[in-house]
Image (tube, rainbow, N blue to C red):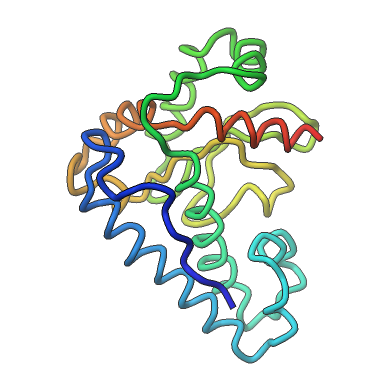
Length: 201
């Protein structure tokens, strides 16, 4: 069964861009709920419990219909958040192969940020904006609603931002664009580069 992963930093490590209270609630309440409800959904399917959460949401069509929506929502929430925590860190500048690839695809890091921010701020309701490696092996900016994951659509996430209100409301209220601007200050580009290199293999 699945467990809540520990954060690799303190809740206040991303201040002032993302506040400690938001991080604590986001991690211990929201992410924990996804884990608990995913485990609950899988209780009567012991064979499925042996799969990784990534495998579950990658193959939703084989999940029993009575728990498919729960696995999609809560399995996706668990996978997305486990990914999200790992790509957050202050003071890391874009570098490595991912920077070269972004410069080639988007004609510069500033243009990439503009397009990524546009995706994050124009997503209606709750969901995520992503930089992915698509099925053609190319970088692409995409949006997913709710807790849907790019993995379900045969894409590999490289970078993602949670734009559910619980991710930013205590500090930014309805000012999602300000939250997205702040997010650019806490991207762990070393981890993002690692994701990119692994995806290219």
